[in-house]
Image (cartoon, rainbow over all chains, first blue to last red; front, top):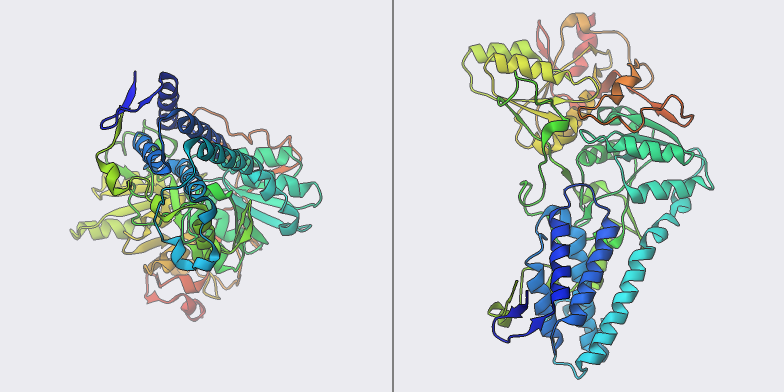
Length: 366
Length: 180
């Protein structure tokens, strides 16, 4: 199968096509839990491949190619924000390398964040490609070290004899707490987290790591939260204003924490930070409603087909409930995230479906 | 968690059109029985777990809660999870109605849920609806794991709009007045 653009007849090799299709399939099939880090690294490798093997002369063409491919990925699904974020990072790298020495500096002021020019650069493809690939290698090493950067801050945030409340399962938080355990003695209370009971997995892992763990059902969170020193949670995505798309049940936990003035700390790597805002609470736009087989038995005939059962997967947590974000770039207040977004992503890439005007006729068809 | 069924069925007899959302919590899942009774009475029902309470709360116009006691300082002692629902409802400015007969009024005072509570069977938390075992099933052997299954929790009076008793409709803080 040969992939070609309609107007210019550029071709992409069979190998790359099969790798691209494999990746698209991997994303579509990820119904089960997949680790953010694994899919993010896969994404970078697939796009690195695409950059090396597709035919392009200017950075603008390369960006068009990348965005065209993105149309075939299920990126609008709420599950895939980490993949979209990494694609945006790659696009930003391309734009920066293209701008080269004319990179926007702080002397240009805030308006430089919104400038969308892509000057025809004097750098030819071979050099540009080299620079881009070097930056991508740096991106990969940043992704690799993101977790260790986060967990190294554990000792600054956990003190001895503390009681920490956490919710459900998060790899980042688990490693954060286990790292803290090496030097401090503290207790962790884990909320079971609803129908999926991921909290049980977290509790098992933490107690295997030597931390005294208590498992409580989610309904008891309000009852015990006044006796807790802090709440440390992970999240699926961080929205642009500092709000969270977190597992179902975190919003009420954050509300309870705020009521008792218990700080809520979110541990998440910066590739989970998405430049999107909440536009609607609907399942299509923000949430994902999954099957209720863990909530109610199908064999219950009295309720079968008479009762509407909702099992949303995510929860929207407004930024007022969050005290601190611990990311691989350090600790940040929710109000600072807009700066990080402006450094990581280019405004034209916030909406990955948005192609530049000339690109509308040009399309890659598979 | 249970919702107060008799009132709801009475309203249904009066042909008022309304829907009930039953909020349930593990491990007891008493809401399933509530749902069955309400459906049998012909009231359209929805069923969610307490995690999804914030998701549905904006569609809810009133919250009806059952209670086990009303303490003299106005705190409502109810099945665990009641306080959480009261908090979410007050954040969304939804009225919270607690149903409590006067024989449940108590002269005890309590400000938090832990000081005086009951622990239910922790192994009931291990029940899962799918075939897999819970990952903490071996918790008794592990020295670091504990399961805590509280039975009650106390809801502060600020989160409750009104208490309905058989003699009157009162604010929470009138409990000591009735006790006299």
